[in-house]
Length: 116
Image 1 (cartoon, helix red, strand yellow):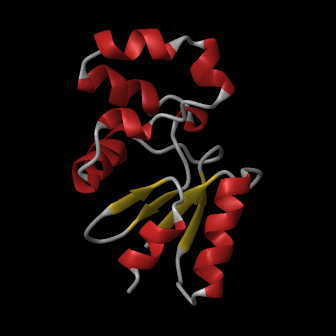
Image 2 (cartoon, rainbow, N blue to C red):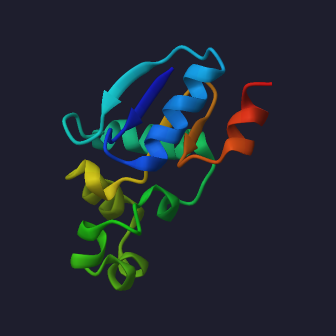
Image 3 (tube, rainbow, N blue to C red):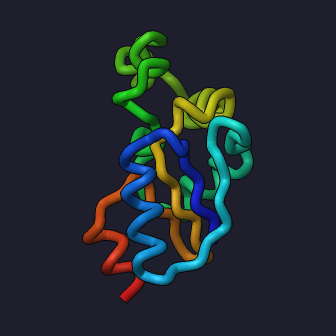
């Protein structure tokens, strides 16, 4: 399982602590240093079962400065995936990529249910 995050992000730190406290082993990846590729994002999006907009870091400065709130509704899925692949700071984090699903963001209850 891959844990993809931005180490300075407090939500990512909470998720990392949760994983460690619960003995979950993972492969760490810094999203800023190694941005997810288009192919990875496409695969993870399909696996997650979530709407693609959930993969955008809507509270991030880059998202806001690019005014994506107004632009995303007019973009195709393909265009959105290509945009996400340009910069890890556009991607909501953390991402927990498992064999059968992808958890986007950190909700303790969601992690607890998955690792029951």
